[in-house]
Length: 247
Image (cartoon, rainbow, N blue to C red; front, side, top):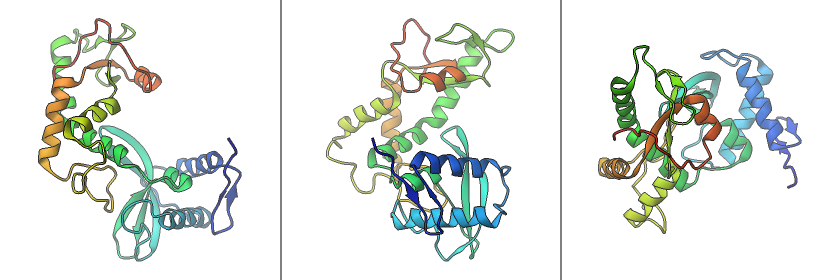
């Protein structure tokens, strides 16, 4: 597949999207979390990237808005996960985040991906409670439980949750069928894009409750090493004789 070069209106360019993403990731990592992007050249590159983002109409209102005062790096916590991203602070004091990866790729998030985000948000608290209860019941004297894949003893800090038999996105696909949404997610089901919205959620509590109930009766979730979760995230796991969380 031919590489697609990336050109910004401030004159910066890269031979491929991957090279541009690596550049902005390295730019981000040069600054500590919570810092202002102080180098004028870095600010110029981010401003040009944000203009690309808005020109592509990726989602919701303009990220530039009334004008940009500065950029900052901040820690985003989404569905229990953490990542460092760029935030825009505007001239009127309003602020929002934006994805440099999506800006480079010019790729709006599809409706199904947004639904997956909303479903993760809906069950996050229940999963956290289930994990706490699991450790209370199964942990040894050192506070560790057995990883369902490797058999190693892991602490709550080092554990992750893995869906066996049916991955989370597959479960969401099954939920779509039960709701009769095969032809598209109806208008008003998901929250509209807004400033500082790092993830999509259900607009109606009833839809969130419906997915939680579906998740309780369908999902098979087990406690494994966080390191293995990252390695096996895209693999379908059969489950074996593992002990699952009670949801």
